[in-house]
Image (cartoon, rainbow, N blue to C red; front, side, top):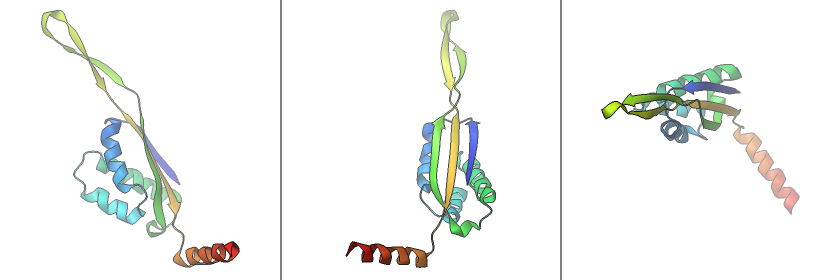
Length: 122
């Protein structure tokens, strides 16, 4: 259950601030956080999360964000004219964003596993 955006035109360090907020959270809670966040990158990440939820085919309340990775994309190189015929380089950074979802285990399954592990250790 993955979704990704390639070459999104914003620097990775700015996008990582947003993905770090939602990493490890339930999908419904992450959607709420992203819809209220005042950052330019929050809308594309929310759309990406919605896409990952749709790709899974499972109800959003049963999913959580397993990982949210932001990698460096292509760097577009431009130049800015300066005095006396010089040119200074400008680097326009892009990001590759990957969100991976996992299914949340039910409370009954977690308690059963903890009982089994407790019994086997004694």
